[in-house]
Length: 212
Image 1 (cartoon, helix red, strand yellow):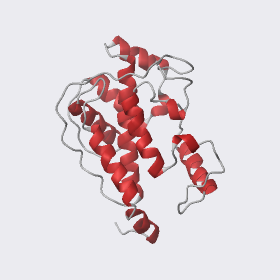
Image 2 (cartoon, one colour; image 1 turned 30 degrees about the vertical axis):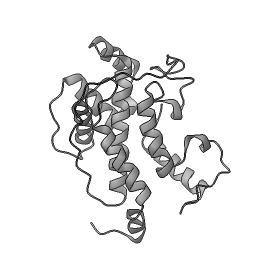
Image 3 (cartoon, one colour; image 1 turned 60 degrees about the vertical axis):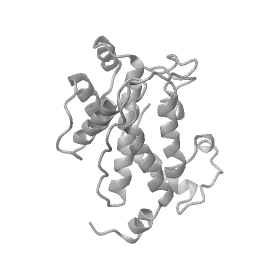
């Protein structure tokens, strides 16, 4: 695929490239509820759901179904899906981790699609067992799953600090740091002005039927 001049410019974004490489490697680490191998399998199923991969490692149906829905039809998610998840023996916060993994691989892949690159191969899993790392005070507030404080876009993954940290590490290089998202007079100092960035973000959110 030939790159347009704008694509060529994006392809030289070393800060963005480095952030995406770190995010990809973070998918291979053991999480709070899933091993590195399980996290990579979830990411692979997210890719198959979007048509970005032909096959994915075999996992239990609940993981595959949930990864597919979150990756390709998140707007259809309802509380009964979470009830089915817990009835199958999974912790509610494991659902948060799955959402985090799918969101991470979706961000990585969207970036590469946007600049006309081939998708990166998934790394090898890092050995080790999951170790729950849970945010202090995480509980259900105004959302279907626990958060630390009121559920908003920046706090959606706050019940699992490691997953929130992974998300935050992508926010600044690809969009804005959380602490300035609502400071609309802050200019990012990039090719797009802040109003242009917000227009793109709002349109993308609308097209993707975003909700949290």
